[in-house]
Structures are given as structure tokens and as C-alpha cells.
Image (cartoon, rainbow, N blue to C red; front, side):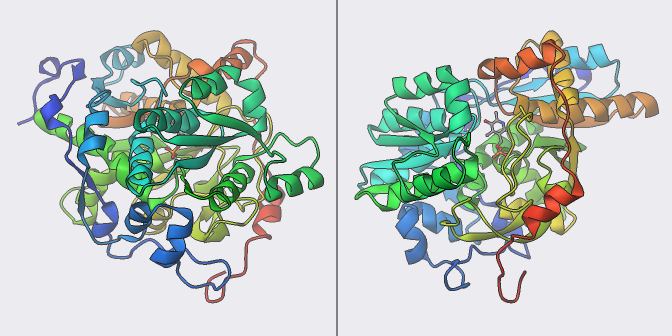
Length: 462
Ligand SMILES: *Cc1c(COP(=O)(O)O)cnc(C)c1O
């Protein structure tokens, strides 16, 4: 029996003992599975052995496992989770009041750790499996810096070496992020750099470039495969990352179930899809099994609209084309969002799992413009207190829009959204917004067609 309004606390905390002991693998409940990663050389699905060259073996196994529904969270990871989990589920009473909406709004807050985002949930898992395999360290890329920070924290905890290729514009614009990583012992290199072949090649072709995520990925992969005892790790997009992030949704569902609350609409921002995939996992599982129905909305920036304007096709995951091919909603690996785009979520593609679910019509997607995102961020900050990350604020925008629709129709819908992190390192973007200097940019159809024209040719596919 659902509780009445004032019986539900502002914050619903789970007990430490209620922290999930297993991750939930959404793919196990999908009848049509996400398309496999392909070897760009042979065009055949990547085998465990091939994947194990780049990723550590246990993670490669998780990447390929479409069938095991629940996977035990190893004890060491579980102990680490306890430092900052369970994360609170908040009933946004103050936001509801400010909006004058009959809708009931809940958000799952993942910013309660130093890295300031949900990325730590997967970082500790990936560092752990690398350590268990006896490796010396891991390499990765970071854009805005949250993933690099999370991985640095995880590696420090496990005494592993951590090498981060940071997109050069961010390296220069976010010196504090960089120093947090170095404080946790990571080695941070601005990308493109002259420390890798692919970096040197990109620098030659585009001297003075500020870099991109796709390019930093290529450098990090090269660094991993050319050093003994290193593997590459990635903070989003991959199946294994969505698996680790399922802890978000499992906790959110457990907290809602305590009070008999069932969301009507679940909203999350989508860059590579990991927080959204994690948040929706148990709910989507019910939907796939025909046990319940939910409206699920992915929110992306209008300046990098993979779901809403991209194509479902095999594409490269990185600019240097060293990674396996993934079938996903993509804008093309050569797509570069406009430099005026401030709010993160700038990856050209989207998780294969979410892409397949979107293609099956199991979820919706919406794109929003950045000035409206920052307007929502400020509205939220002023009543709920938390200074949200620009990425998270995409979800806030649509949660507010849906709550305002309820105000018009008088419907008392229950809305759940993912508040993925805090925005303390994004004050340059907030400053622009506050000064009225932020503008919106929407790529033209020609811009998108240009990068889509460079999709790889895959026999039997694109
Ligand atoms: C990285 C990040 C995102 C986007 O990544 P997903 O993989 O799409 O979840 C969203 N919010 C924050 C705070 C992030 O750091």
C-alpha cells in the first residue's frame, strides 16, 4: 500500500546492510541482445581472447556475458562501496512546491563522493579486476574529468598505477580537476600528446587542436597495449560499465519499494549511457519481462544528439579507430560538438545496450538546449540546495518539464530522475550562463551527414 505524501521522508536512506550484493545484468532479460562488438580487421565478433588484449579478462567476460542475470559484487568492491553508498534517494518536496505541481518527484543522488559523480561505481570495479589479474596499472581517457578522478581514487585505494589522458581543453580549463587526480597519485597527460603514435599523428594533422574524447581514447588504448602489465579501462558506453552502474537502480528501486512507490516516468541524462543504463536496469528488467510498465526518457544535449538525430549502425568508438566496432546510435566518430557546448555528454555514440532498447521502442529520447539546461540547474540549486553537474541538469530539465505538464493536466505522476553529480568544477560554464554569454548551438543536418558519411563499411550491416 503506497504511503501518503507526508509519510515519505525527504531523504530515503537504505541501511548499509541493504546495499545490493549483486549487480544486475539487464542483457539477460533482453530477448534480442545488444549487437556484439566487432573486430575491425575481420568484421567478426570480438572473442574473449581478443578482448582480453585490451581489457582485463574478468571485465572482458562481463562485456560478453549476455546471460548471467546477477553477478556477485566482490567483497573488496563491496567494502569500498560502503564508503559512499547506499546513496540517498531524495523526494524533491521543495522543487515540487516551487513548481506548484501535483507530480511527485524523486531523484537518486550520486554526487556524494569526492569524484562528484556516479563514475566511482564502475571505477572501483575495473581497478579491482585489473589488480586481481596481477596487473601494474590502467590507462584511460577523461573529458570533463569525472571519470579520471573516479579512477584515480579507485587506483589509489588499491595501490595501482593510473595513467590518464585528459582532453587538452579540459586539462587547461579545469586545472583543479587535474590536481585532484594528481593528489590521488594519477599521471595526467593532456591529449593529443606526443607520447603516443596516434597522438603524434593527430597533432600533425590538426596542430593546435584542443583534443576530443575519441582522440584521448585512442591514446589511452595505445598506451595500454604498448606497456607490459597495463590494460585500458573506459568509464561509460560498455556493457560492463552499465552492469556496475546497476547498483544505482537497484538501490533506487529498493528505496521506492519500501514506501510502495512506483515511478511512472524515469529520466536520466545520456552521454555514453552508463548512469541511465544503471538507473533504469531493474525497472527495464520488469518492463522486458512484462511485469510492469514505465516511461523511460534519455536526455541528451541538442548539440550532440546521438539518439535523436544519429543513426543505428556499427561505428568506431574512438577517433583513431583502434577500438572494436560497436553497433550504436551514433553521429559518426568524426563528429565534433561545437566548441561552445559546455555541458559534457559530448560522446558521439551511445551504449549498445541502450541503443538496442531504444531501437526496440522500449525507451524514448529527448534533446535539450544548453541555456535551458542551465536555467533548470539554477532553479533546482536554489530550492533543493545541491549544485548540480551540467550533465545531470539535462535530466533536471526534462523532469521539470514533465512536472509542469502534470500541473496543466492535474495528473499526479511520479517522476524519478538520476542526479548523477555535482558541478563544482563546472563554474566556468555557470559563469558564462550567469553573464548571459552562453548560447545554443544545434548542428545542421549537413554537419551530421558529413560525419555519418564516414561510418565504416561493415559487410551485412552498414
Ligand atoms: C560522465 C557523466 C555523465 C554521463 O555519462 P553516462 O555514461 O551517460 O552516464 C553524466 N553525469 C555526470 C555527472 C558524469 O560525470
